[in-house]
Length: 494
Image 1 (cartoon, rainbow, N blue to C red):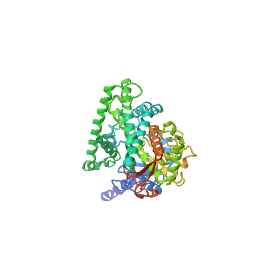
Image 2: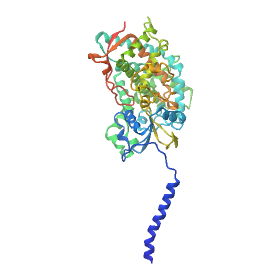
Image 3: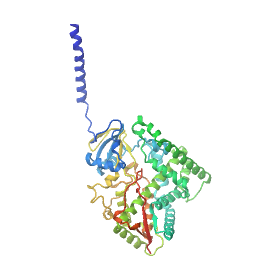
Image 4: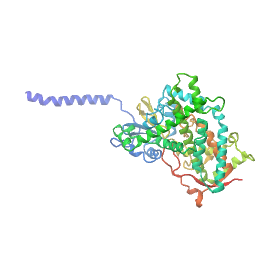
């Protein structure tokens, strides 16, 4: 009898546990997750990112839809590839999706993410963003810098003229990096550092590292790879070099104590700290982090926009001719174009919009992170999910744009669609709380540089290369530049 009882105990307990499991399974609401491709053990979907993540994610979205759930290691990633989904994330639920994930490389490069772009959503971010918007990037401040932009762009034209006297060929990519860097240096730091080879080198290294992925962020057990590969060592070296440079900048500005209208960004930040004890700028690291934001957003993205815009114009000579006719009609006999002239150039603005549609400087923007469980377009999204908005894919969506892969500025002449974060079919600078606060500053540079170039010069390609065959391949990085420098032949327009 005892043997019989013992033989029944295990099946009985198994049956009871089975009933409990069924009850819990049926009573727990099943999650309605976004479509997702199969993932591999440990790495998840990391292997599907490819060399150009914005293109790989776009290809996957064609199969899995405008909202797609991936996993990078243990981290859930929501990929947004439509204007409607972006509107839901960046407008309707902006407060839920305004956090930033903690990424180790930006965290180490930018003083524990004390800048505006990467800092977590909260009181610190609100204060430093407010300081940037009101003190550094307001319309009044942008207008006050017009003399710097006009002087540096005139020097750019003269530099090209001097090249023309000795050679027919000009590297426009180098020209764009140089003029962007010179303007940002003067506005942010009070003087130019562009001719300093050491400065240019570690700025380039900084930008390259900012676009790198750290394996340890997604697969902690493989974090040692970043040490073995030398990535961590490079990050520490560049962070140290930039810190030494910025320490010197702050020390120099602290001693000078300039007054009046010719204050640069470093002066303004230091003055704000003196007048507002206990502000978030009490720490030197916060000031350094904000200055770094100006370089990353100002120099790299601006030169990228100019590079792609001129490449598209050269590849499409009819559009270039229309733009040159407009600029020269507005300028007439004037030797120098001013920013007041640029305001009258409607086709110029359409050209830049079309370039931004096709070539978002940061094609997947800066990642966001959800702060609570929520639903997006009917799908359940868990707290802590990272969000990648594929602005590049949205800009080429055939449901939004006719002939989406063609460069056709005329599509923007009869529409109010703009890139300032209100029209979600065109969001190269993001939208909502975490949208770029420096759009007006960047566009003032882009428009003036482009107008002065097409006013003074005619462009072609060297070695008999045909315009339609111009290589438009992309390079890797957080900001997407051309893979090959834009080399052109020039002639004086007059």
